[in-house]
Amino acid sequence: MITAFIIGCEIGFWVFVLAGLFCRYILKRKKLGAWLLYLTPVVDLALLIATLLDLRTGAVATFVHGVAAVYIGVSVAFGHRMIRWADERFAYRFANGPEPVKKAKHGPAHARNERIGWLLHLLAWVIGCAMLYSIILVVDDKSRTDALFNMIRYWSMILGIDFLISFSYTLFPRGSKETM
Image (cartoon, rainbow, N blue to C red; front, top):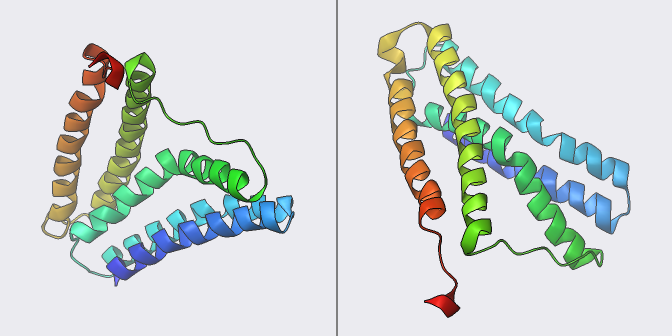
């Protein structure tokens, strides 16, 4: 059940984003569009409540319950950036907005973007792990929350690998194709 709810929340997030952008640029209803965009965190709240209810009613935590916390952490940390990305492209395509600026693919600007991306990943990790630890404390049964501890371990390893990759561009900047 929780797997379907996570998928539904991801779909719901993008439905609110697209509906908000549609109202803003196609229907010219900026307030309604903004209201729909502001509803995207409600999707995260619904997922958090569903996960807690599932575990409070006796379910044994699984990898999927951990994914719910990861999803919420990533959504909170990267959500504004994802919405801005979609907004720029929607405005360009449907409202004669300026062409979106392409990300730097080499040099110091690329290294800076990678560091910022890692810092956002760190924020997502902090939020997600805080949620995982909170759920572990609320459930208060180690035999039912082992999967959540494992999710923290795996995510921590992924964060470490991301750190090495992201900051390697600071030490060894990617050169442009002309200089290679």
